[in-house]
Image (tube, rainbow, N blue to C red; front, side):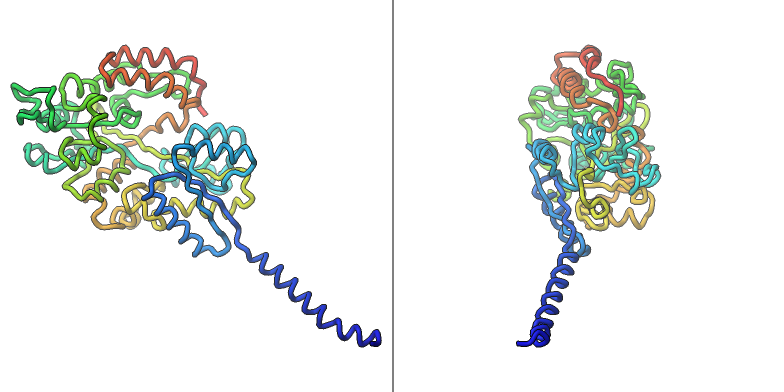
Length: 446
């Protein structure tokens, strides 16, 4: 074969090879960017998060989000190991105890380029996380501490339902008086009647959680605080905080309208207590709406009783992007999507509340989550949840800003406060102990 014929024969092969290489390169270029998203949650939450991930992937063919569900128990250890190995997820839920130190070490992406310098103009203050000049971002979602109640028990006792409007919140004396009327012993005597047996209670007027979400709203309501604004001193021993905590202890041991820790330990969960009429009023987080809605009994929701001012707290959890991500733009797209009430059913289902102000001020956007699934939120939710969260949660709880808060809580506050709940110390003595033990642990604010 002549050289010319050889070149003529090879030209189609070379062209074919070039086309094949070009096609392979195009296919490679079109491969979606992969984003790993780590999260925890119940089977119910996992199902809805995975549904949201699938919807995002379908709507964004250039990005593929891979969900990594990790049980709460062991979550921190798993993420810590991934971070140590240089392979953390791109986007993740994080506990505050990890989020803040890691942000201070530069391991969390600063989101100011994406959210701006003043995200508080867009988001509720209590869902924005900062460490110095670093903007960690926002919480995953929000929720407030509320009053839930069994309407049948109120009707039977002839007691008016807890108010849904903060401006009409019960004062403490009214709350206690009503709780007594709703507390019954096994002989049918109420706690405000002669002959009532506090050792044989069949229905309690109220139950409340013993973690900070259960007592901090009342400290704030009474004009108190958990710690000084600069984070250098615990303030639980101040009169306003002591009085609030003592009033909560008196619900158990003086008024006999709430169970002791031992009694509570032997009772069902809060949602079952209300459904089974073992408790008339349950103080708990907004996220319990989904449980009560699924149980389908005659329940309602209202604001907390007040001491001085009607006050609640917003609870959230940081949602972060790790600085090691190779795809920050795409990670932020999903970061925003997973907290969008129009995209994730958990808002409509009563587990999550939004973190953007417009979902608490714009009637159409309020309806997007409050009315998203008929029969979930009761009619009074617009006052008892929407208005309450927007206008009556003035302080960020200490987990948002206090350094070393996990050790302060675990080693000083909780052991002391537990003595209030089990009745072995007065609020004054227990808080004095908490302040003393916390002093060497305080390191200021982030």
